[in-house]
Amino acid sequence: MGSADGLGAVAARLCRHDSYVVTGHVDPDLDCLGSMLALAWGLERLGKRVQVVSPDPVRPEWAFLPGVDMIRTAPPVPTDAEALVVLDADVERTGPVAQAAHRFAHVYNLDHHVTNVAGGTVRYIDPSAAATGEIVYAVLVDHWGLSLDARAATQLYAAIMTDTGSFRYSNTRAATLRIAAALVEAGARPDRIASWVYEQASWSTMRLLARALATLDRTDDGRVAWITVTGEMLAEAGARYDEADGLVQYPRMIAGVEVALIFREQPDGRTRVGLRSKDYVDVSRIAQQLGGGGHPRAAGCTLALPVAAARDQVLQAVNEALDAAPETVPRGVPGGRG
View (spheres, rainbow, N blue to C red):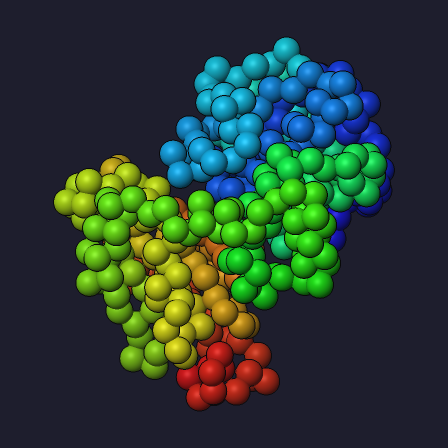
């Protein structure tokens, strides 16, 4: 799916302005940040004025990204630019930026989330792209004809590597690997980027992991497994809230599990839920049903419920989705129903 005009037409229109604000979603991940910085790099190469704004501060772990120091945290939101470019999210997920979006003459929305169905005066949504970084790569290289340097290549490689789980997830296509190869040729260092992302865990993160693993549980049939992080666990570990990101991979590792979940208690009493699936359950539909969104294999939502009640509601929705899955998926086999 994409815009009716195609990415070429969107890219041609995108570069017509003189000044831009480039932004992404709250609690930005590396696909969001890498895409923002790489697009800003490209616009600057075209002689444009660019401000990069994040709704939330960049995590200390992501400080390795070249150019990350140019990112400003909103508010305030600069509105003295002609165009606002929202990457990796619908406009509503940009926090304080969304409140100022109406003040821009042009609002571009480039994303790969299938649940992004509204927002922006010019839109390009491509769920077949493994990461928004793939879309930005196509804009910069295929449509603007830019030659990437090591800085932009590193930004985009980090974006694509993390959104594909180091090229392990089902969203990894042949085109994804070709782009990754081109980024390596342009100067990205896979070994260094992987080390920065996966081998620099803080002591507090590991202490949190030890506590969270004690909550690991699954359904009797073994198709669903989950892990829980509470405020008390965060305090005991001396960990930040965002240091729980990535812990959902542990229930996902279990043989026979199709849907993995993480339940995170928020300070206001709500529960943030992360959903992952392996083969056939579209967790984006489950998340949408619960007021969230995401990808078919990775999605999330926030429920105005304490953890125990949220877990009951989500497990019910997940089990209904499992029971409604195509009968062509065999039971009792790896990745199958049972």
